[in-house]
Figure 1 (cartoon, rainbow, N blue to C red):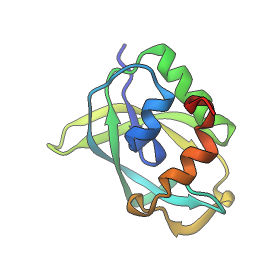
Figure 2: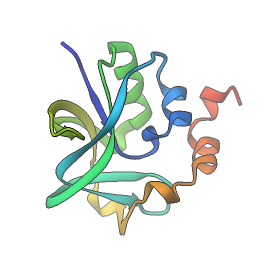
Figure 3: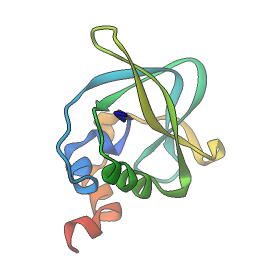
Length: 134
């Protein structure tokens, strides 16, 4: 069974994705419905929560192998849990995906998380040091 993963935060950035997984995967823009992305309070990355009528744009990675799925689960940690839902690609195709829902909505700010404002280097220095050999 193929597992596709929808990413909506730090994992959309190749510099992060390639430090977490070992494989090379096809990717494409996609979005999910009835969820909203907010900044985690006091941090650089986001979480999503269920929110009727909202939508989140992100990046879908296709056919993730079991070892890399386990690495993604480890990277996301206890603050998130992986769920199944559907994402829509740019051509309107619905795809069954897995993504990471934030467990504690109270830990999110009321501000949307914006990819163009992501502090990539700060995130890499804080959360990807092990993968960088530091």
